[in-house]
Length: 316
Ligand code: NCD
Image 1 (cartoon, rainbow, N blue to C red):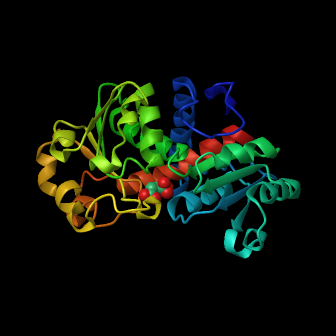
Image 2 (cartoon, protein in one colour):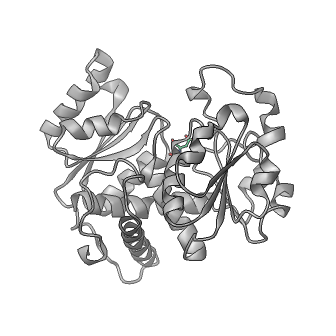
C-alpha cells in the first residue's frame, strides 16, 4: 500500500498550503484506489477488505461546530479501514463544565486516541491541538482558515472529470471571506496550475486573497467570474461567522445566486460544485442544484475515499 505514497507525509494534516504537489497526487491516487475497491465490493465483485489497515486504532472525531458530511464520512472511512471510532459530543462532555480545549484533548490522548479529527470555529485550533497531543491531528475545518479534506475531495472530483486541472478555470463564488473551503481550494488548485477566479460581494472578498497563491483573480461580477469557466464552485453564505450584515440578504440571490441561464456563459461542459450544506434559492437555484452537470453528490461520495486515504497515511 505504502508504495504509492510519498515517504515524507507529515503525521498531521493541518492544511493544504504546506503539502507538496507530489504528496497531494499520492493521496489522490490512494483515494481513487480505495474508491474503485469500494465500488467493486458494493457490486458484489472481488471483495477487498481493508479493515486490517487500521485494526486496533482509535479515531476520535471532535467537532465543535455542526457537520453532516464531514463527520459522517470520516467515521465511515475510519470504519472501512477497521478502526474503532468514537464521536466526541461537545455538549455532553466536560467542555460544557468549562474544561479548556487543551485539557480536553490531553485527556482524549491519554485515553488512547491514535487520530483526532478536529473541527473548531477558531482558525489554528487543530495546530494548537497537534502541539499538545501524541495522536495525529486531522483538521476537519478550522474557522476561516482551511478545510484540507474538502480541498482534496474536490480535487478528486476534478481529476475524475478531466485527469488534470492544469489550465482549467475555476470560479469560486460566494462568501469568500469566511470560507475555509475557498482557501484550501486556492492552495491546492494553484499548485496544479489552475486559473482561479474568486467572486463575491466586495464586503466578502478581501483583496489580500489575490496574494494567497499564484493564478488568483478577484471580481465582484458573477457574470465576469463565470464566463468561460470550466468549474463553478458555489459557497454558502456563512451568516454564523458574520458579526454584522455584509450585504442586504434579500438581494443576495439576485446578484450572486447561480441560475441555469448563467451556465450559458461558462464552457459547454462546465460543472457545478458546492461543498454543502446547500441553501436552495440563496446561493443557487434548485434547478442548478439538480442539474445534470452538478457534481455535488459526487463530491460527497468522494469524501469517504479521500478520508480513508488521509487516515491510512497519517496513522496506517
Ligand atoms: C463546509 C464547512 O463546514 O466548511 N462544509 C463542509 O464541510 N462540507 C462549508 C459550509 O459550512 O458552508
